[in-house]
Image (tube, rainbow, N blue to C red; front, side, top):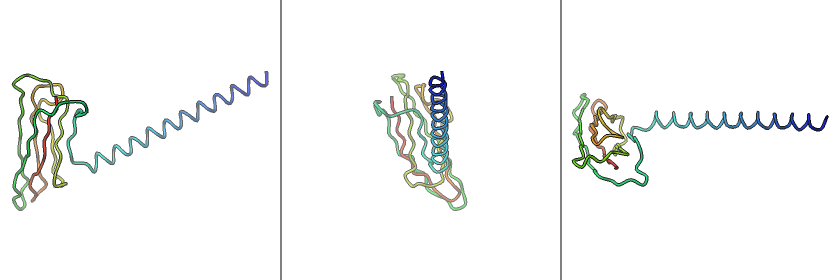
Length: 130
């Protein structure tokens, strides 16, 4: 009886240890994701893995001192193919922001909005995958 109680106790301890390790791993992943969200200004929605690049466009807008620049790009697929990934990379690594205002993953169209930091321009590479 003493032996089986000891095995049960050790099993419970091992389960508690695994749960704590999983919790620590989840917290670490969340922390690293938060750092990436704070530091990364690229827009990556969906996936490009094992998908076909259907559209690639460079989005540029010259800087004007003390002004924020805003530009919108629209893509629509004539063949009604469903978008599986949208990537907009900031080539200049500025504080500009890219966002999807309509459509996107799961749709056959996407409307992208780019907004520069004050006094900066825009220089993005946009890729759409189906």
